[in-house]
Length: 474
Picture 1 (cartoon, rainbow, N blue to C red):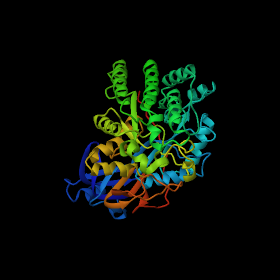
Picture 2: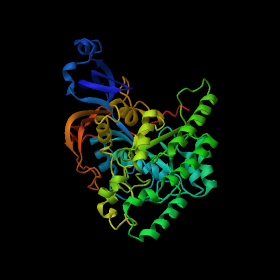
Picture 3: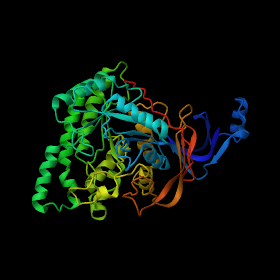
Picture 4: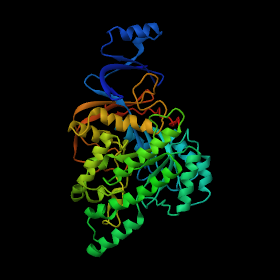
């Protein structure tokens, strides 16, 4: 039994001074500051709890928030364990206050069958520090439809669809197959998350840039090659299919201003129609949602001159007006949540110039600090950060009993302290695009299912993670 005492609790859009009693991995009781000093003692007495046996964590002067939920990571296992493993990257995640994650299928071999999916679950059961779920990959193989039909939506987050080439090329170009994937997902109440770019546009842009620079392409050209036009084309295609089939659809890593009105329009039409078709109106239910990533809110194209290959990712980090538009869309609710697309590569994978360097960057252990730093600078409120990184992912993915600090919910909690903290690198790949930065917040302690897995910034060695479950309420 643990008592988190005298912290500033931030959850459900509000902040208050209070304490939290955790028992059996569950938030048993929340005591607000307005309660009498005897409230905790009285509660323990009435419920037969020996309060003298509680482990106490003093959270005075600290923020106490739900653990962050990252809906988009690439932990590289199986197949590229030299870059990262479920153990190494989930350890970095909990040190950064991320207590749950959803991992992508572009592994080796690709996670396109239930058998391979369950193998990843076995790895996580043995090694993950954070709660987990894994996407089943969509593929061009006709038998993949049968795998999607067999997917259990209560115990798996969904299907990942790649509409463009990126690491571990899983691109699908056959429109008939793509249509079948959306239809099947709707029939089986399965969520599709999609990487939406257009290779035809990307390849045309690349040829034009090569005419100007040859093979010595500056990294500042990356947002010209993997352009906003490419993102818009891919996003429009996916949204049209989602609206056609009324598929529960989540746009991955929105990166440009021009995608925002497409999402806003699709959400207005499709979510309204879904609610009208649902008995009782289904108020608040969404079938179209969108995420952005921490790096699209933190960096813009001016950073290529400093970071070069370390900022190369797919879709590309774009321009200042894109970053500003994404921030506004987060605050207005058009963009639902913030993820990372955490994608570690070895330093050698980033060498060889633009054409040879891999796309992707590691941020799962720093994303919460990045957003809290923006709150420190006045870009967001603390409550907005908690909403977009902790609560919204649980709501839009129907994750059971997580994402809030509420009585009866799993005790996934991050305790945040204020100060000045140079960036620490905890990824197996050994680098971060944030090296050299100093943050004004850091995660002091992390609890996963009521177990302290990080204390004073260090791993305790405890494992208490669980496979995520989903209510799938519509």
